[in-house]
Length: 314
Image 1 (cartoon, rainbow, N blue to C red):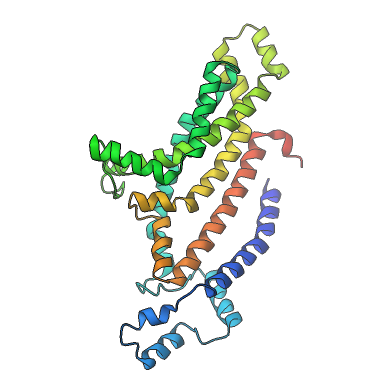
Image 2 (image 1 turned 135 degrees about the horizontal axis):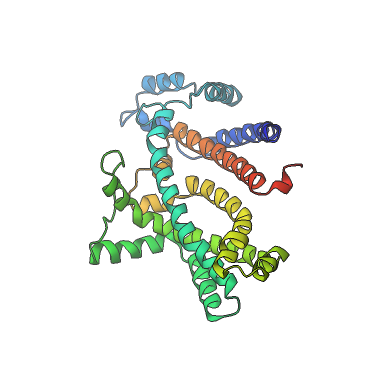
């Protein structure tokens, strides 16, 4: 296993380098000049030149990239042009919020998607199967931003059950933190639940036809024991792999949801950075997201090998 992980990490290094080059080069194509925004309304030429010298913007682009990637290798993602704070500090403040939202969303997806997929496979061809597939298709089709707005209008504005926006740290008030993230996690988790339901159903349909399931039933085991202990345990191998990749998507894909519910997380940070032309923050966020997604891919491969012993010899 250690050899497998080492091989995958060595394979990921060239990918990360290519991503860093793409991220750095792409931000150079964005319109606007952050130095002009920093110089104020007067835009004194001396101030502009001083800022360009300070942030090495007069250097050739390859030299700028090498200076940036050298800092990245030492854990320095640069300084925010807007707040003058280190990018690593900003990411360290916002990333835990998005991780908390992602964890709650994936829990919601598991609680809804896996039971629905098992029930749909077990009742294949019945109205329960059609209903589960219809709900799953609806979850895949409804845009998150529309569902979020509708939930705010119904749950917060009319029923006054949950706060419409904002965020409270779990270290300050765990109950209030749960309440502020419940609706966003339901919005994100509903779409993920549809994916998990379809994958669980597909995996269960294959497992329920296996010989060991028929043998378990022939031994007179209870049906729920056959479904959970024998069928579901083996069907979860591809489902856990998919869930790991979906968790990686959540870390970088919660932008709209965080904007709608005014959650100060990773997604909102990148949107604010784009609008303020804070290129150092954009570069740092995109690079961290890419590295995180590669790490989740590695974790998915490791989980697959641990859950499926047949792959450990390859």
